[in-house]
Image 1 (cartoon, rainbow, N blue to C red):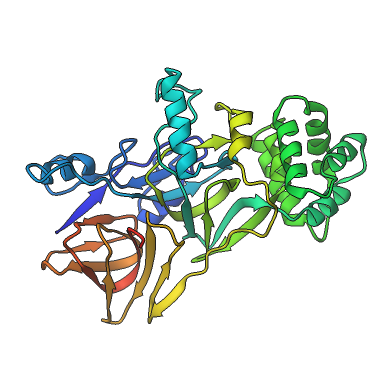
Image 2 (cartoon, one colour):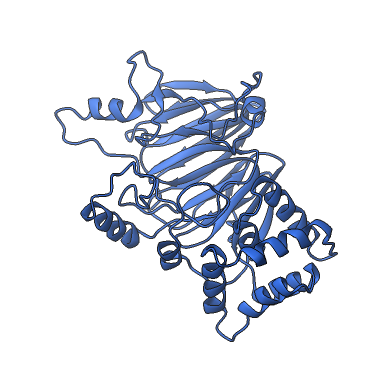
Length: 389
């Protein structure tokens, strides 16, 4: 069975006022539109457009009546539109989420409390694929040799020397862990102020994009220590169709652009700056992977003409990327319940049951697990989220 899905954009302050509207071909609402969720997550379940009036979680529960408890989707598919930087954040592993949620439950912390770190017992690995021509992000901690060159290019004021000294040592993860803890602890205000002042005039042939991004971050979050944490991270610019995979423990922040994001169905976030929300520094540092390295790019695997797949190697999700034109058809095998989401043109998606839907940019549908494949035709482009293997 195929059923159309819809949802209202979430109006987080960092959302773009134009990107989702432009994709959907409508006038902007005037409010920030940050994310559109396509899934059964209780935080914002999609509406099933079949006349039932049900959201997808209730719709799945109704279909399971008499056959046992409904299966929750293991993933959540989103459109994400960043007009300004999101918080620097990290997500827990499965074991960390289970232990953290149990600990906070035992302490009597309500799930909706602002100081709560673990909203559920699930991990939250995620993949973001750029839909705009340019998608900007921070992902992972940069190699320290390069970071030391960046800080040298920034200047030689005493506050900068203190930052460089904190990063010295043979154990690079330990040096980064020590430095991030110090920056977020509240004892680094003078250094943070010095770095932000130095950014205003900083120029570098090697680190120009990093300095430009940091200046924009500093303008959005004046005085925030996350500005300096951002300078320790890989600055990434994705072209359309390029992707990042962010596993547990990897610091990241999306800065600007429109993307399709698929993640494990969780709302667990530990924040590390660029936010007015709660930051639990000890818990954050307990789950951060402080190993420096290159950005976590995820290359697609070509499957056939106009078909590629992003497979991060986890059971929660994988993502098909399908382009079609000129009367061609693409047959996409599924491994369970799937959500196709159109991002360009007009595409028709048909299931083996004979049901079909036509999707335009920003429109999505839900394919029940009995649909073993989807046939895509028309002239356009879409992504299909489904469980991994």
